[in-house]
Length: 97
Image (cartoon, rainbow, N blue to C red; front, side, top):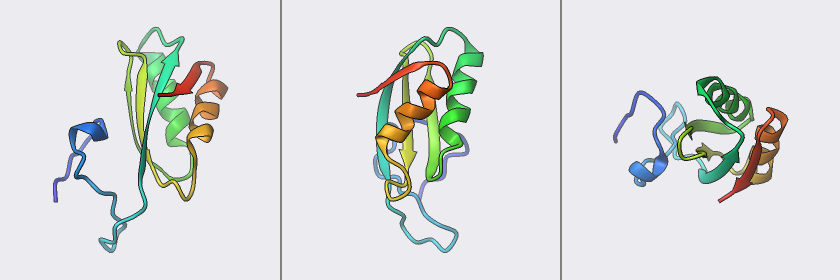
């Protein structure tokens, strides 16, 4: 099992699986969001925090230059629409894809 100490896009490690403290595989979904309106590192931090505050979100990677975020989450606890709503509530536009 590979352990990465910081958030990275799941696409770099497609074999990675989320595990609970007992080592049991957890349901996982990965969604890429297109985000507009981010202009600086503060914007990135605001989007990251908005997404990380959602129940079931395990990791968030926000790319300022690309205007994208990749989010790994438990799809039994949250859905892609909740991700876009959280980004919009933080003051930015977001769409899935």
